[in-house]
Length: 132
Image (cartoon, rainbow, N blue to C red; front, side, top):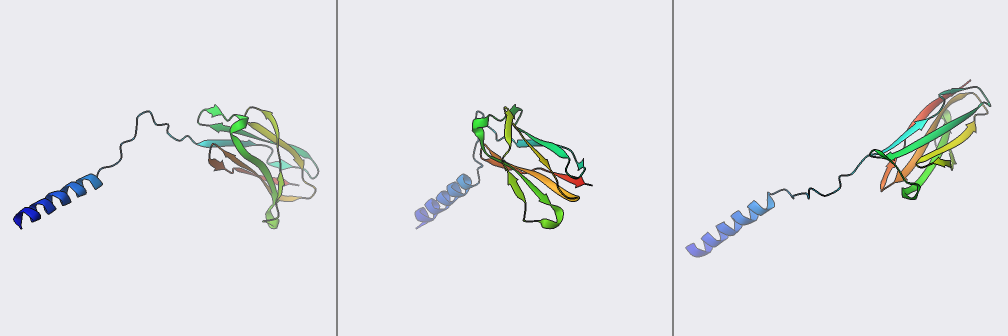
């Protein structure tokens, strides 16, 4: 009986010791990098004035290759019409650089938001635009 109790206690100690260890990461394992989208464009326009909005997409310190971009769209939405935004496909103007040209037909406050998915991550920066 003492032998069984001793074996049980030793087994329990080994089990608890094994469960308490943190997994060791390989030093060669690639650390995830942030997907960064630098959205640029005018924050103020006149009614019917055209503006260019550009998204520069990087992963870590490198521009994202166009083959790595899973999805990119620009959404334009008036502040009081939330949920009724217009989705636009941008034009590729360089490696990891996309742009749209648009104008606003009535005064108000709008958001221009890029939706970018690349390398398994998603980023949605936005710019607020005041149209007079």
